[in-house]
Amino acid sequence: MRLGIMGGTFDPIHYGHLVVAQSSYHHFRLDRVVFVPAGQPPHKLGRRVTPARQRFLMVALATMSNPAFDVSDLEVERPGPSYTIDTLRAFRKEVGPDGELYFITGADATLEILDWKDPEELLRLACFVAATRPGYPGTELEEVRAKLPPAAAARIVSIEIPALAISSTEIRRRVAEGAPIKYLLPEPVEQYIMKNRLYAGRAQPEEARPDRVEEGSR
Ligand code: ATP
Ligand code: MG
Image 1 (cartoon, rainbow, N blue to C red):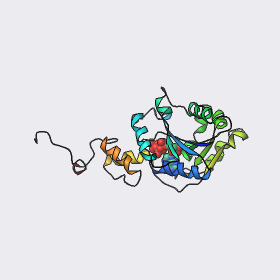
Image 2: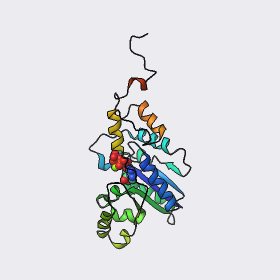
Image 3: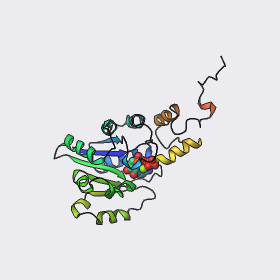
Image 4: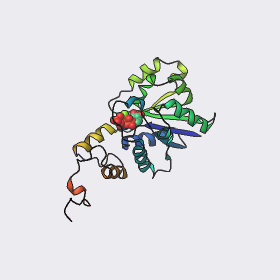
């Protein structure tokens, strides 16, 4: 069993995430890729994050048409901050000692691995896939490897993916400003955002709400 694990906040999920997952699936001949939305991301405690249930639903909508993709509620259901180490231990149990785990991240996330809980243990549990991301040069990865014992360093592998300069931050900003997000993320996710007024609430044009009835109009 070769299992890919795509962790993230997914607030919201977008085509950058999906391309990284699909490229890793192909490149490492994975059996499937499980998306694991973070419950309480420990590194994002400073900002307001959309409720986990809604981020989970958006990931489910985005991945439902791909038979190789799955979504897990492991972190969403676990109380307290979501640590990758706990997640990898859980998946290690699932695949057994002979299974192979690939934890898929963008280059920016991999560069932070030394600050995560138990980096060496993390790298024993899974190979870390560092996918290219616009704005994060691959050369810095060497500096991370240099600070690790060789066996751990060898478990960080990088892959080149078609560059998509899409981020959830940019999508949230665009929604708040009323700018289009079409073609940056799957359509059902876009519809979910608009229907539930995520990221903006009020910023939608009137014509986007045809079923809205003004108070006192009937
Ligand atoms: P935010 O802007 O809120 O941080 P994000 O777009 O970075 O959101 P995350 O949920 O933080 O999305 O990312 C989950 C994982 O996907 C991370 O490992 C991140 O590096 C990776 N990732 C996100 N967008 C891209 C992209 N466009 N190309 C490559 N990797 C990406
Ligand atoms: Mg991010």
